[in-house]
Amino acid sequence: MGIRLPAGLELASFRPRLLDELKDYGRQRFARDVSAGLTVGVVALPLAMAFAIASGVKPEQGLITAIIAGFLISALGGSSVQIGGPAGAFIVIVYGIVQRYGLGNLLISTVLAGGLLFLMGLFKLGVLVRYIPVTIVIGFTNGIAVLIALSQVKDLLGLSIDALPADFFSQIATLGRHLHGFNPMALGLGLTCLAIVILWPKLYALPAIARSPMQRGLKVVARLPGTIVALSLATALTALFALPVETIGSRFGGIPQSLPTLQWPAFSWDGIRQLFIPTLTIAMLGAIESLLCARVADNLSERPRHDPNQELMGQGVANMVVPFFGGIPATGTIARTVTNVRSGATSPVAGIVHALTLLAVVLVAAPLASHVPLAALAGILLFVAWNMGEWREFVRLRQFSVPYRVLLVGTFVLTVVFDLTVAVEVGLVMACVFFIYRMSTLFRIEPLPLPAGVPCTVQAMKLYGALFFGAVAKVEAITQRLHPDTRVLVLEMHRLISIDTTGLDALEQLHRNLQRRGIRLVLCDLNEQPRSLMDRSGFAAHLGAHNLVPDLHAAVAAAA
Image 1: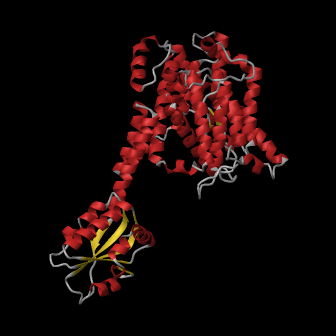
Image 2: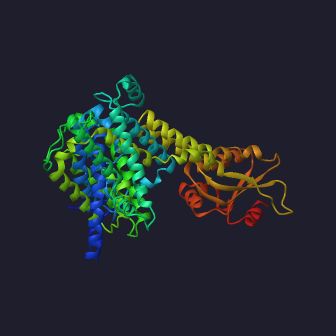
C-alpha cells in the first residue's frame, strides 16, 4: 500500500548526476577526469588531516571522511564536478560538539544530520537554502575563518595545552596564560610553510619563455600544489634534523595503514534528545556550504547546472554512512572543487578518483605521516582561513545601507562570540525585521486628484505597494486625513499588488469607522490577489458590488 502525499506535494526523484554524465562518456573525458582526480587527491591529503586535527579528532578520521564521503558525494550527488569531504567551515562546529558532548555523540549527530539532509532533498527543500541573505553567509563565513585562525595559534606557537576550550574568550585567556612557553622552532616552521603556500603559485606566473633552464624547471615544479610542497619540506626537515616540535606521531601515534573498520555508535534516546541543536547546526551548515560550493562550480564549469535536491540527498547519504567508519561531517569544499574544475574535470568520476587516490596514499604511505609537524598543518590552515573569509566586504560596508551593515557585522560578531546556530538564527530574525521595515516603507497612500466638477464631498486616495501586517498603521491613519465634509472615500488600488489577512482586517476596520461617520467607501481597479481575498473572506459581499468598481471614472460616477 503506497504512501499518499498531500495534493501538490511531490517528492524529488533520486537520480545521481553520475548516471547522466556517463551517457556520452569517452576515453578523452576519462583521461581528463583521472588527471584532475589525482591532482585533487594530492591537494586534499594535507587538508583532510589538518581539518581533523583542528576539529579535535584524530588525523585518520579526516582521511576516512575524505575517502568515504568524497566517494559517495561524487557518486550520488547532483553536481558534475563538486568535491566533498571534511571542510574548514565544520572545524569550529565539530570541535565544540566534541568538547561538550564527546566524540560518540558527534558521530550520532552526524548520522542524524545526514538523515535530515536527505529529507530536505527528498522534499525539494534545496531551493530554500538560497533564501538565506548573502549578508548572513558572509558574516558567519568570516566569523568561522577567525575562529579557525585562532584555533591554530596553539600549534603554530607550539604551546603545551592539553585542550582549548570551545568558546572564544576562554580560548584567548588560555592562550594568553601559556604564551610564555611558546616554541620558536614551531613558529618558524609554521610561518615558513605559510610563506611557501602563499608564494609557491607565483612561480607558475613566470614568463612562458624562460631565460634559463632553472627558470623552466621552476615553472614545471610550480605545478605541484603548494600545500604538498610545504608539508613535504617540513616533514623532511623534522625527520632529518629531529626538530623539537610536536608531530602527528608524538600526539596521535601515527596513522593506521589499513582500511577503516565498521563501527556502531552507541545510540540512546536520552543522548539523541540533547543533540537536537548540534544535529540542526551540522545539517544547516552542510546544506549551505554544499549548495554554495555547487553554485561556484556551476559558474566555473561548462557542465550542466547542479540539482540542489539531489545534491542534498547525496550529502545526506554520505553523512549517514561515514560516521559508522569513524568519520566526521562532510560537505562540498570550495577550494578542492575549484582545483578540480581548473584541473580539467568533466564528471563525478574525477571526485571518485580523488577518493581512491587518498585511499591508495593511506594504504601505502601512512607511516610517513607520523613525522608531519603540527606547526606545518597550522600554517596551512592559516592560509585556508584567510582564503575562506571575504574580508573586502568589511571595507565595502560604507557603500551599503545601515541594515546591511548591522546584519553582516552582527552575524560575524555572534559567530565569533557565541556560535554559528545563534548567529544564523539571530541573523535571520534581523533580516526579516529589516525586510518588513523596508516593505512597510514602500507601501504608501497618496491623495488622488479628481476631475473637475466632482463634488468636494468626494475624496480619493491611491494605494501603492503591498498592504500587509507591517503597513496597516498607514491605513488606520486614513480617517485622520479626511476633510470634515467628506461623504465618499474612493480608494484606487491599481498599484496595490498584494494584501494579507491583517491588511484586509485593517480595511474592514476602516470601513466600520467610516460607516459610523456616515462616509461611504468605494474601492476601484483592484488587482487579482486583493479581489480574490476580499471575495473569499466575505468583505466584498459586505461592502456591496456597487462599491467595487473597475476604474476611477466608475468610482466617481458611483459616488455621484
